[in-house]
Structures are given as structure tokens and as C-alpha cells.
Image (cartoon, rainbow, N blue to C red):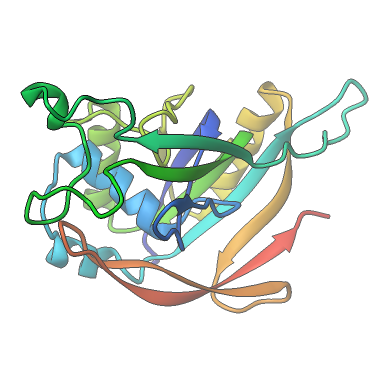
Length: 236
């Protein structure tokens, strides 16, 4: 008998699922990453630090995603919104002679002024008006623990970044098979005037195969990840 699946519904005006962000450019993948989902679950549990044992237990669990967009009046999928780009200047406009304002100016690791000044420019990208059904396989006891934590989280929950606030309860039940979980997600989508546009399966199937470096091995100050293969398939 196979393990059951927990259904997560991820919906918000903005979401961001970074997998290859570097320096001043914070990209977003088109769908939730394993690292993002596991981070969300750790927030719900109040689990801080490296979490190596927990992540090792979760690493190879099956995770499937279905993406939903809004429909027009004829019931046809509306075009997806383009990525939203947000420009940030971090540390700009502060008086470094003021002890309190000086704390907000970016500095080197040893506390000295950065070369060329402390202001840092970043470009941050967001998905707009998307919803995702994520089904995650695990033991019944662990999924029940995660479901309870998502209903009463230890820390605030966000869909990628702190300005990505969910607009629907995330935990949507535990199901014996992934088909039952996605059936429930389909009913939710219909009630929200949404339709599926693509799905993401773990492993290699008939579709666009991607290699993602999004399986967390270690969280904390020095994060570590390993690769996995996924297949993106359009919904017929």
C-alpha cells in the first residue's frame, strides 16, 4: 500500500519561487520548487536551523504540481500575466552618522563600509495571479502533523517572499491517492473560475524535462541543495 498525499493550495496575487537567484537578480521559476515548499513546511512547524535529518527524510518524496489560471467569460483560459519586475535599492538614503540609521546600511562581513558605498540594487521577479495545487507524498502520521501545522503555523507563511501572502488556506486535506487530491483541487479551481494549464511531474516523462537544483540538503546560514529531474507537461 502506497503512502497518502497532502494537498497544498498555493494562491496569491504575487508568488516567487527562486531556484537560480544570484546577487542583485532574484528570479522566479514558473511553479513552486521543492525547496520553497519544504521551507514553507518548516515555517509552519517552527523548525529552524539546518534541519538535515528532516530534509533527508523528505528529499525523495513524490511532489507533483498543477498550475491554474483564471478563465474568461467563455470559460477559456486567460493569457498568463508576465513576470512582474520590482526594483529595490537596499540601504539607500540613510545617514551613516546616525547610530540607528547606520544599522540599516549594508556592510561587509567584518562590519566595515562596503566598497563603493553601502547601497545595493536588486531586481526581484514575481508570478502574478497564479494558483498551484501541490500534492506531497509521505507517511500518514507525518502528513497529519504537517496539515495541523499549516492550520496553526508557528511562523507566518508566505509563498516565496514576505510580500507574497496566501489568499486561501494552504492545507486542503490528506488523500489516499494523488488522483483524489487533484480531483479536489479541480473542484476548488472550478469554484474560483480557474482552469489548469500545465502540470509538473517528478522524474522524466513525455514533456519538457528540466534539471532543477532545488532539493534542499541543508537549511540555515549555509544552505545546500542537490539536483532532481522534473517534467513540465501542458494540459490538453
